[in-house]
Image (cartoon, rainbow, N blue to C red; front, side, top):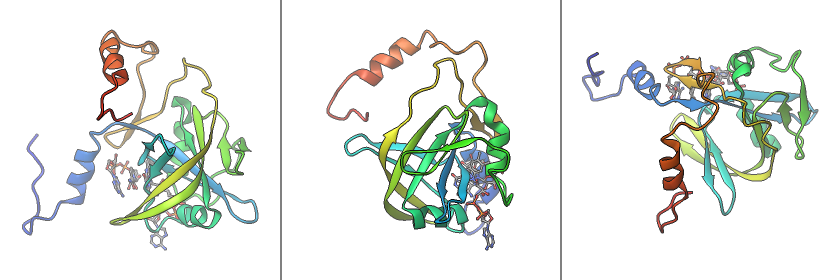
Length: 195
Ligand SMILES: Cc1cc2nc3c(=O)[nH]c(=O)nc-3n(C[C@H](O)[C@H](O)[C@H](O)COP(=O)(O)OP(=O)(O)OC[C@H]3O[C@@H](n4cnc5c(N)ncnc54)[C@H](O)[C@@H]3O)c2cc1C
Ligand SMILES: NC(=O)c1ccc[n+]([C@@H]2O[C@H](COP(=O)([O-])OP(=O)(O)OC[C@H]3O[C@@H](n4cnc5c(N)ncnc54)[C@H](O)[C@@H]3O)[C@@H](O)[C@H]2O)c1
C-alpha cells in the first residue's frame, strides 16, 4: 500500500488521517453524566487516557460540538465506563445520534451521581478539573474521585482498531510469555519512569 500523500498545500487529508491513526488500537469507553433533571447522557469515547497518579488525573477529548460534553461541563462531573467485549452494541448506540441512548439499558449511579453502565469492565468517577483547547476537540482533564472494583480477570475489553470493533483472542486471557519482560520493564523504577 502506498503512503497517503499530503494535499498540494501540505494539508493532511482527513481520510488518510483516519486510516493511519486507525492503526493505533485502543479500548473504548462510554463517558456519562446527568442533566440537572436527572436525564442520563453519554457518548462513546476512544480518546481516553490515564494522565497523572499524583494528583490522580485522567483525560478525554470530546469534539467541540458534542452535546454530551456540554452536559458534562454543566454538571462538572463524569463517569468513564470501560467497555467489555460484549458491549459492542452499547458502544455503537453511544456513538450514534440516537435520542435516547439509555433506553432499555441497565445502569446505576456512581457516588458522584453519573451513570454506571451494567456490564462495564470498570468505571472511574471524576470531576472536571481543567479544559484545554485541542483544535476541533477539547482536552478535558478529570480528577479521579473514586474507582470501581475490577470485575473479573477473565473479562475481556472491547477494542477499536482500523475503524472497527475487535477483541482479544478468546484463549488469551492469561499473560503471554513475553509479558514477564514487559512486567519487569514496567515495574523498574527510574527517575524517568512514566507510571
Ligand atoms: C469507537 C468510537 C470512539 C469514539 N471516540 C470519540 C472521541 O474520542 N471523541 C469524540 O468526540 N467522539 C468520539 N466518538 C464519536 C461520538 O461517540 C459520537 O459522535 C456521539 O454521537 C457523540 O455523542 P454526543 O452526545 O456528544 O453528540 P451529539 O451532540 O448528539 O452529536 C453527534 C455529532 O453530530 C455533530 N453535531 C452535533 N450538533 C451539531 C450541530 N448543531 N450541527 C452540526 N453537527 C452537529 C457533531 O459532530 C457530533 O459529534 C467515537 C465513536 C465511536 C464509535
Ligand atoms: N477522537 C474522536 O473524535 C473519534 C475517535 C474515533 C471515532 N470517532 C468517530 O466515530 C465514528 C466512527 O468512526 P469510523 O468507524 O469512521 O472510524 P474511522 O476510520 O473514522 O476512525 C479511525 C481513527 O481515526 C481517528 N478519528 C476518527 N474520527 C476522528 C475525529 N473526529 N477526531 C479525531 N480523530 C478521529 C481515531 O483515531 C480512529 O481510531 C466517526 O464518526 C468518527 O469521527 C471519533
